[in-house]
Image 1 (cartoon, rainbow over the protein chains, first blue to last red):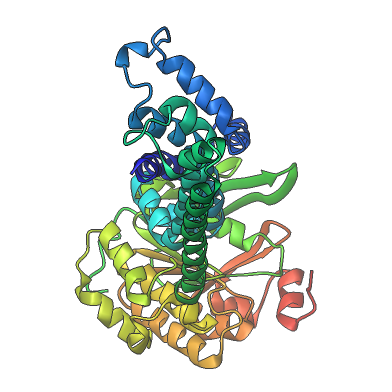
Image 2 (image 1 turned 30 degrees about the vertical axis):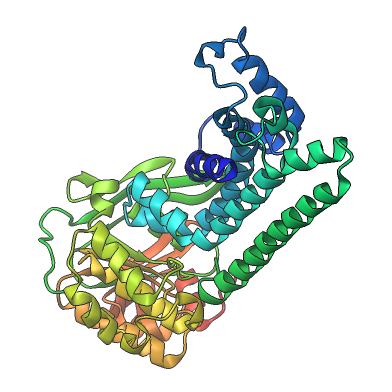
Length: 205
Length: 241
């Protein structure tokens, strides 16, 4: 649920932002893109630490009281996933924009109409971006363990459970959980491949 | 294509001292001409003459450095562009099905879907209406581009080498459709390299070379007695750049 929630929020931020950055020209656009691209490689532990500092009792957002809660984990994961979704969707839409720019100008399409058309026409490719973001979310451990605290039945997820069981020496359970995670990851990869081939066959997007 | 809007305010099209530079290279140099409301104006000239750029300026897709384009009293812009359509040299289509491409323009222009099937029939695409555009041939894509351009009932239709590299059947379908819409008082401005096509359909000619208009006039006069040496060379097939 944590991964799905953070993925949904990251998509609502990343896809429109990536689209706007692809079709609008303004000062500092390239700088902004460079920053977003570099954020794709953010170390999860660092994100966890920063979110922790903000949400801890003495931090600026400490009054919210959400440290060691699923909400804090979602915030950390959104910070990790949103740049990936923004940057990848920007690349896809920019390619489409090469084809559509003159057409939309000629048709006097309004900016919002154009944005919806870009997102709609690249939906299959964007789906692979979303799944890539989901893959990153479910495999992430560094940030969620810092801000979630790995509390049983509250903020313990599969990756943090594996880390805990390994540290306890309970390697059989850790390995079992690892295999389940691997199968989930493999299923996602297969789904991405299938969607890619489907999109090539039906829309060339 | 049921009815065409009034053409009172869009004509004549006056081009005054139009110039355009890109990277300090003069691509259009001091173009001046006047286009009347009726008929098919064909823009001819060798490669690199500036024909496509000129049409882009007329449609408001490229901004000139100097000069003005007036549709009646209206300066070129979004308001004039909304009453025009353009068919590009390489078909620019949404990555959707044939009918969805037409529906997109119909929705933008708040038109109902009723005449879309009629347009598909006229462009011989009825059987392909649910196909994705990636499965269409070049000729089918260009016919679809023309059908889409007509969805908004334009007063002016620009065609930028729309029939180049098409098979004779597709060329014939597009030319027949052009003749049909010309009768409905739609002004057509067409770029072509095909002298025979220009002879078949042109009412008047603009001949360009090196970013300049070298000759304008009625098609019959132009083909029977071209005034400029370059036009004579072009018609003989000698002017190649």
